[in-house]
Length: 120
Image 1 (cartoon, one colour):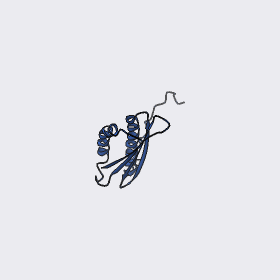
Image 2 (image 1 turned 90 degrees about the vertical axis):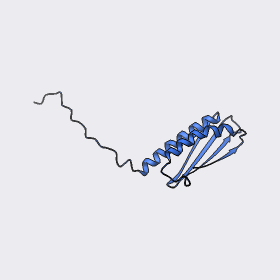
Image 3 (image 1 turned 45 degrees about the vertical axis):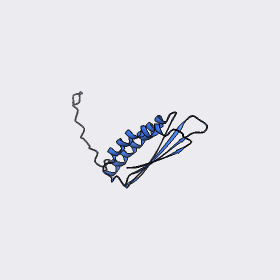
């Protein structure tokens, strides 16, 4: 996976890099079916000028589509957590759609319940 990061109005790069490594490993597990050269993740971390808030936007480009998510938080780690959690959910949903899981939903017959009222 090719990972690039852009920083806007942020002085500290270390919390972002150390916090992103375990989450990137989890994403690589989800994206094993794709070639490592074909998967690109680009992130933009920006600090709000008016508020003490960080905004992280992630764009994942894979051969079957492009996924985009955002995360905001008072700290860098909070914005990391929300953005990567949203991206993991989007990846799972995208892969379910590619596998056509919605067509293969098992339809179980309803069991017959004996009636308590005697028939006349």
